[in-house]
Length: 214
Ligand SMILES: O=C(CO)COP(=O)(O)O
Image (tube, rainbow, N blue to C red; front, top):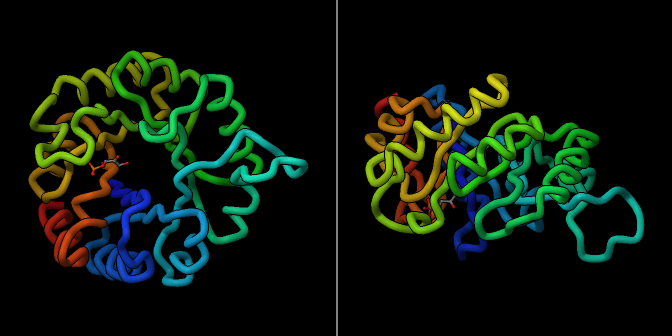
C-alpha cells in the first residue's frame, strides 16, 4: 500500500511530519510520501522522505506569474504531484495539460476524483494513479472505506474498465491501521490522508498506527 500524506494548508511543522514519515516508512517498509505546501517542498525533501507536490499548473516555462511550474517543484525535490484535488478542482483540459507538464518534469501523478464516474473520465487521461475522495467525507472521522465501501469498489472497477495500468487509491477520513486494511481489501492500492496525521497531536504515533496492520 502507498500512503500519501497531504499536509494541505494545515498549520503543522512540515519538516517534523516529514521526518516522522521517513522513519516510519523505513521501519515498516511501507511506501509513505508527504505533500506539503509548494513553498515547503525543499525543506520536506531535505529530510529524505518521498516528497510530492499538491498541484502543478498546466503551463510550461514562460509568462505564467503565480502558477506552480512542474519543473520548479521537481527541482525542489518533488517526485510526484497530486492533481485535481477536491479543494483545487481543474477542468478536464487543465488536468490533461497538467499531466503533460508532470510528464515533462518526470513527476509521478495521482489525479483525484469525487466518484467512480469521474475516476473513469480521468483514468482515460492515463495518469499513474487515480484517487477517489468523496468530498463530504473529507476531514471527517469516518473513513471512506467504512462509510462508503461501494465507492471504492466502484472506482477500482471504473479504472480497470478504462485502463488497467492506472492504480486506484482512496481517501477521506482515513486515519487508522484498520482504515488502511479496509481500503486494501476493497481493492485500493494506496490511501490519501491529511487531517489524521497533519492535525494529530503526535503525527509519528498516527503514522505508526496507520501502518501497523501492513
Ligand atoms: O483530502 C484528503 C487527502 O487529500 C483527505 O483528507 P482527510 O484525511 O483529512 O479526510
